[in-house]
Image 1 (cartoon, one colour):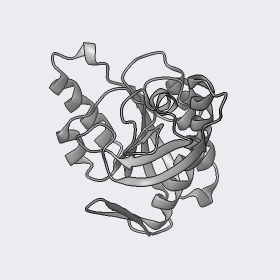
Image 2 (spheres, one colour):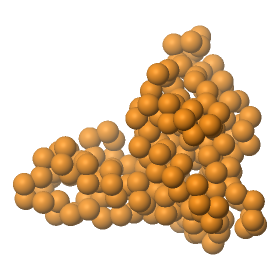
Image 3 (tube, one colour):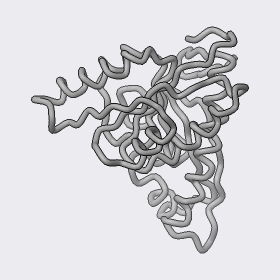
Image 4 (cartoon, one colour):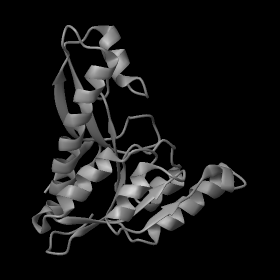
Length: 207
């Protein structure tokens, strides 16, 4: 884990779409006190807004598209090498829609994080807000976790609660979750980068 010093932690952010979580991190990194800087942004497809956000900020970008490789293993290796080339302290999956391999996770052990639009371990998978609404819960939210080989099953770093309103649609609920998610991501990543972190069993300790 990174040690606590005055050198900004190095973030590599992987995106597949609009990059709103990436933008929240870019904005936060403008303050030197945040303790981190985005050193590269990667994507699994070309011409996505997340890449454009990085380019406007003067940050190096790379694209590793699955269709350009002979196998998923070859794609994963290319992605792993590209990320490693920027020597990240933390790899943030910010709306990255591909699963990475166990080899990728081993290369960056306990340094790959992702968000999920529900309060883990409830409602894993891509339908988190819809499943929460259908189940009738009164609160849901979002989770930041250390990525492991499962689906949204890694160690929980942070969570934020969002109330479910009586007139919510999946879209309205998801939009409020996204707002909470961006704030949670920025807060937790900043604390991890400034204070360091450790993973012991199911527990993540910051500081």
